[in-house]
Image (tube, rainbow, N blue to C red):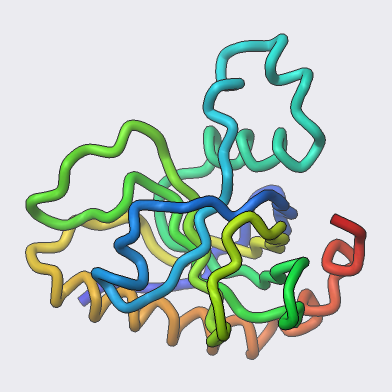
Length: 180
């Protein structure tokens, strides 16, 4: 059994914004949980000149990916384009995903937001804003695909409850009303 507890970030809350890019296709097709993969400018990691060229939000996403331990996080999120621009609860994975037996290695960390809401269509290329509140659990290795799916489902349930209980006010964070 995996232990889940919301531990607020030291830099509480973290505000991230960036483009949704194609991931590895496993979120919705393989696992049944559609995720929005944030663009991370790994080409600027370790290159001060390229890092200076990043806009503020791209730099924040790269910093978060570099400094944040792998694991599951609770957040609020908004897709800033398209017909459905509501702010919804998010269970977010930071890490080398997926993480179960038989996977090939992924070279860089990903930030994959599972927005706990059903969208009518994909929104690749759209701008995503996240207000990340805290760490839920460490990244774990699972022995089967079924075990991974069950734990992801429980992550979503935990984030739903934790965000509703004490952090609903962040749904109205000014960061969500800023232009993209």
